[in-house]
Image (cartoon, rainbow, N blue to C red):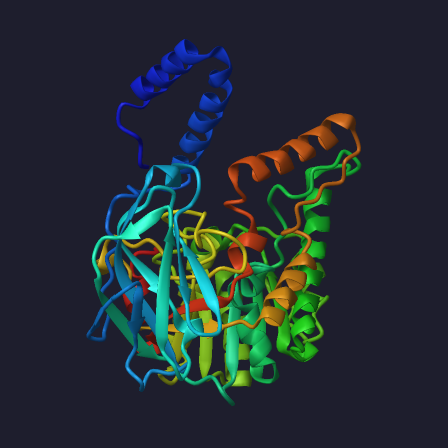
Length: 453
């Protein structure tokens, strides 16, 4: 984790100067120091390091003149367009995230960077491409170090009339990563939730007689959410599954059988008939095999195990590969996402409704992809996604406050989010003007899962 040099000296010196000037200055100085310290803690890397990416396409060299640039005329909205830039943030960016606003003659988008970010970063301007293709840039708390930039473009694969299988390790993962995508292609999309989501820290209430009862109820809530939230996007009800495997136990399940008392209880909520089977890794492979052979997907969407830190996410993709290999499935595009980025849970950076661009990456050998797929969300799609997330119990910032202390703790958490930023707040992270996926071919799945086991 990045740590500021001479942090203790900096702290003591700033407090000493504030006290000499006026004792009341200690209050804003303390706030500044706490917020700056908190801002740095959210990154598991040095924010002054350059992002490193290895694209399969050659860059187009563009020069920025008077804060404007033009793309070649042949580029349209069927492409994903990424700009490689070198930025330097100013002192204010220690407290307020630096950003660059990109505009065309009709619309604009804003892309945020880490607090006090320095070095190579990547801008995603895909939503702005039109017949004009002339863009202007304006920066806030940062500046571009070089007016000569590289642009990487990739042709988006077509999802029209394609059968899409979306693997969601937990209830809410498909919605966070791709609600807009599966809404756009709802007639041909299938959502398969692997876990009922029956553990964690959401339900803390002294009305439950035991932790087991609380987790069972939580699993029921999340499972029903997973079977109903896609209905907002007009997904047919018989296209939605929850396989009900034990939450947070996929790695253990891979190694040995894991007890799950509520396994069949949860599975019976499905509209689609699921077999009455044991709670084992082989059972998971059997479930996925039956679904894949039944719907015959042309596209499969699953977490990227090299950049997603959650073990259930990693092992979901491992299970997919084992199934596809076992049945010798055809070579199809695999779209990959991350809801829990290894380098920082604060990604995507910045405010709700802003753009999602490439995540922090510092070793091209540990992050394999072949193409990038960007899908734009209209203003209404963003609102619709917000309310879809609002229907999911585990995402909401709510609590059942039965005591004064629990109510006070809840209000303090809300105040802390307002004061220091909602870095881990899914309404901020997921409700954006686009969704972003990394693309590989099925035959190359082994390149991204070899480090899982």
